[in-house]
Image (tube, rainbow, N blue to C red; front, side, top):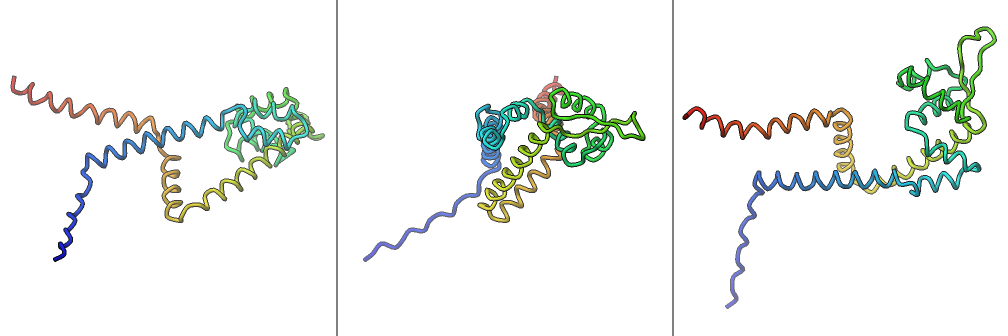
Length: 205
């Protein structure tokens, strides 16, 4: 006689404590991966700078782009797309404070990327244009952004629509969240159990 197959006991659902530990472990892994991704972008010899160097005829352009902040690149992009353009238009259309636009344009002028001009009927108002060097920096950076977007779109096609919907939700909530405030609230919640344990003892005395 053959031995009857033994029934497999049903799996127990994960406990709340186990789910919490799994979430903590995954959160730590996500933060570590974000840090690793940031290190890749910040590396001086990463593929991004190599690509720009290969697509620029002037080595000075790559060095200027290396030294530029994100805000400086936004201002340079605004001038390249809107020239001739004044500071008010840059601040309004790109949502950059007027004081920041003034500071950044002065630096771009010093670097030889931007020049100023005045209209014949209004000498007081200053307008900005790209220099030849600035035009090359603008074109190289715009081509780089287009290449990165193509690569990112191709990368995201690996995932199913439901995966992408989750990613959209996470990024939308992250864009609106204050991680500092969330951290402060979490810290206050963690201290409450200790206070609760101390309260009955104090009442008994």
